[in-house]
Length: 323
Ligand SMILES: NC(=O)c1ccc[n+]([C@@H]2O[C@H](COP(=O)([O-])OP(=O)(O)OC[C@H]3O[C@@H](n4cnc5c(N)ncnc54)[C@H](OP(=O)(O)O)[C@@H]3O)[C@@H](O)[C@H]2O)c1
Image (cartoon, rainbow, N blue to C red; front, side, top):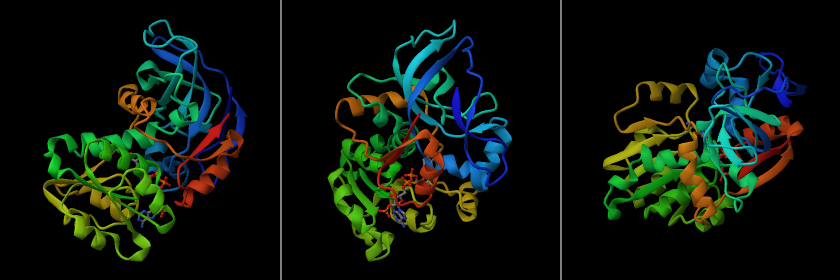
């Protein structure tokens, strides 16, 4: 199999196209021929600095390090204990980037069957590959940790900071589909797009402090921070009495401190994709209720370029790599 990998964990080590042994599935494992890979900020953060890199170094695979989590493709081979997948199935999933599992920047991945969700023929493979981290995180923020369904319909008010990003775009749509009043924060160039996704109000952070602008629409049942540089205290000040501030982004030293000693109303997300968590997202895309926007498709060998683009934090839509 071919994979884009770092030969060592050294910072600055480039990703190279390497030939690695093709793995054989063990009892509950499935081998997938990858057709599309979703790029997420965590993919390059693991390579560069901070707590994600530390965690990946301590718990992730040994070199050569194949980075990446999201993938979609076709089942190629299954282990003897697999009951939920057969060769030929179209599937989407996320690698768990553990000691025993490599990342997804490859033409082949080996995962457990519970990490996969089947994709109907009507769902585009690249759109599916955009879902695992972004979609699971967005849905957890709104439905699970944000507990939107526990709010009375009239109290379902959601503020999404970073509404034009990979996670934010899906959070806006999921909140809207739960009947919420949605306020989205983005820059001028994305105001129209976020409005089109279903936000009731779009606040342009280049025209003045976003949280000050948001006060006119408070109180919110959920404030979702997909940016990471907004003050937690200021976000909590916009909440209703039972509201929650959900921290999606947060790997700056200040954000890590806030996460470790987070006040009761602030919750940190770990958007880990599983087959079960992907099911409602794939169903929503198939039903035309959730739209995925793809910024650019690049060949797998351009993974470094994809990371350069993702680091700008200015991409509107997902970057997809194709093996
Ligand atoms: N906890 C988890 O499990 C988890 C999961 C997924 C992602 N994350 C983290 O969440 C963050 C977002 O991820 P992503 O995939 O959505 O990134 P992304 O697609 O790169 O989105 C970045 C977005 O941030 C917006 N932005 C930049 N500065 C802003 C500001 N001051 N106010 C409002 N929006 C601003 C940009 O919009 P404009 O161009 O309109 O400015 C851009 O659309 C990253 O830090 C990522 O590591 C965490």
